[in-house]
Image (cartoon, rainbow, N blue to C red; front, side):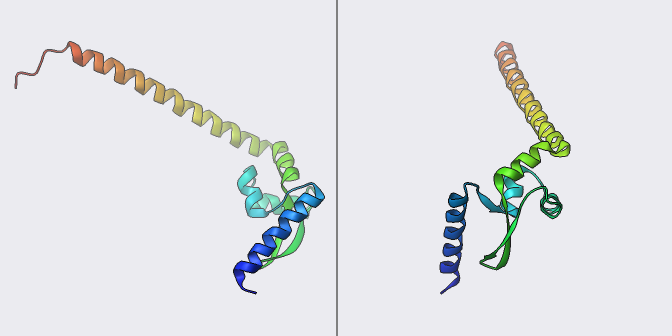
Length: 121
């Protein structure tokens, strides 16, 4: 069995297990990417029993999995993660406001340029 076949079998096993148990078990990397929690936080959470985890055979050796739904719920309780998300949303809102203002200034500049006499040079 080559690595690609083993990887495909492992992914199928994860999918079937998730469907059977009604919860999507994902790698720490995916849980971190989907929820904004760091991998260090995830390790702390499963080591202290705040979230369950399991060790399964992966394509490159043992792989730690956590239930995505429980990680998302735990991440929502974290004040630090909440502040980070709020700060990110505030930054995005400010960028959008600045884009709108630049658009308005460009329109005003174009209107002023129409009123200027042609350059004789």
